[in-house]
Structure formats: structure tokens, C-alpha cells
Image (cartoon, rainbow, N blue to C red; front, side):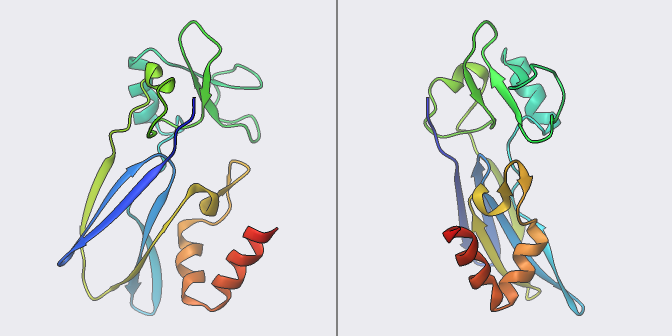
Length: 166
């Protein structure tokens, strides 16, 4: 009953490919005149996404909030979770995972979502990080834009070290 997320980035010539399974994220820093913007290269695969929610329901999953068993998107912090139709498991908060055999019965799959972007001189760098950088207690810890902006500053490394240590 355990699995993991996986994200892979491949740069070939002027193309960047991203394959994502789970809640890890890839973000591209794009220069736009005198500012730098974040362009998401991947998207979290959770029951909060309507397309993922519908895919899982078609596979027989129940999607409920753990604390209330409601069909709401949020109860103030606990994310929606997937459950087998007639059981009390697995209770996962993701829709794609590598190695979670129990969750496969609810439609969880290891098939990645793949994206490709043509790179230009305006693409400065990319950041690949686990959900721990982007989320904290089910709320965004650092939105994609903040990761890009902080990466431009020396304080980014201090911020990460401070957060990881505490």
C-alpha cells in the first residue's frame, strides 16, 4: 500500500520533455520583458482535478473527504481521497503513482502525463521538485511563481535550507 511519485525531464536540442506521475512538479522560468514568469510544465495529479476525478470514478473509485465522508473538495485541509467501492482502503490523495498495487484497483495508474515545450532564449532555467516544496499541509507552500522568483535570488537556498531543517 505504498507508492511514490516520479517526474522526469529530458532536454533534447530545443525541446524539453516532462513525464509526470503524481504530485511532483516541473516549472520553467520564462523571461517576459523585465520580469520572469513561471510556466508549469506539469500538473499535480489529484482528485481535485476534474479530469482525474472523472477518470477514477469511471474505474469504480469513491472520492471522499476522510474526516467527513462528504463529496466536497475541501474541509479545511484534508484533501479528497480515493477509496475502493466497497471498502475502507486505500485512502490515497493522488491519482497517479508508481508501485502502489492496492491503489490500482481504484484506477490509480503509473501512466505518466507527458508534455513538450520548444525552448527559446527566453527560457532561463527549470526547477524540478517534489510536492514537499510546493505543498505544505494541503496548501501551496510555494507557488510555481515564487519558486522561479526565489531561484533568481541568493535567498532561495537559505529559504530551502531553513524550511527543510525546521
